[in-house]
Length: 272
Ligand code: BGC
Image 1 (cartoon, rainbow, N blue to C red):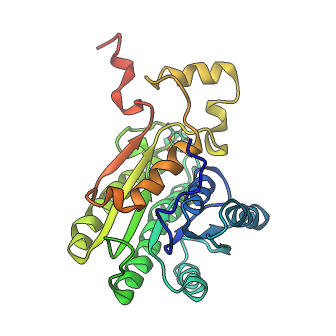
Image 2 (image 1 turned 30 degrees about the vertical axis):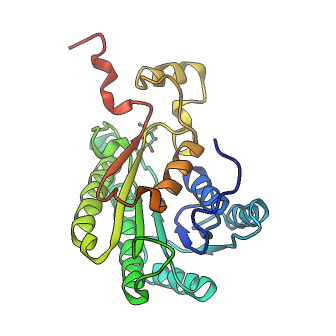
C-alpha cells in the first residue's frame, strides 16, 4: 500500500462515519495521508476516534482532524455533526457513509429490534448523512479545487447483490444502499454531485472475526475468494481516496467491488 503523503485532496474536508475502527478508520487515515481534513465520526469509542484523529495529524503535517460523536441514525445528531464540521473546516467536500453493523440471526428468530437497528444505521444513516452533505454542497456552491460540487461515497457490500442467509437485515440494508446510491446519483448528477459506492468483500476487521480467526474458518472463507486472500482495510482506504479525487471524476453512479473476486460465484468453478 502507498505510504507516502500525497496532495490529491489538499484543501478538502471529508466526513467519514464510523471511523474509530475497521474500514472507516483506514479510510480516514488514507484521506488524511492525501491531505484532506477529516471528521472522524464515532458512536461509542471516543478514545479510539481521538487516536485516529491524532494519527492523521501526525502522518500529515497539513491535514487536520477532529473526532465527532454522532449516531448516524438520528437526524439531530447528524445535523449537529455537519455543523461542527463546518465550524472547524468551513465546509464539507467528501462524505464517506461508512458506519454499518451486523446483528445476525436465523430468519425465524430475528427480532424486530435486530431488523430495525441494522436498517436504521446501515440505510437510514446513509440517507441522513447524504442529505446533509447535499444541502451543504448546494449551499456552498462550486469550488476551484474539485471538479465536482461534492462527493458521496457509500460503503456498501458484496451483499448488495449476494443474498446472505442468516443476515437478511444486513443484506436488505445493503440492497437498499445500492438503489439509494443509484437514485441519488441520477438525481444529483445534474447538480454536479458525484455519488458512488464501494462494495467490500471479506475485509479482515472485527465485524467478521468469526470468518478468519481460526485456520478452519479462514480455509472455508478462501473457497469464496478466487484471489485467495482476505482483504485488508487499506485495500478499501486506497479505493475510497481515489474515488474522492478528480482522477475518478467520470465515475458516477457505480459500485466498485473490492472483493478479490467474491462476486464471481466461485462455487461454480467446479460445479453447475
Ligand atoms: C460483511 C462481512 C462479510 C463480508 C463478505 C461484509 O459486508 O460485513 O461480515 O465477511 O461482507 O461476506
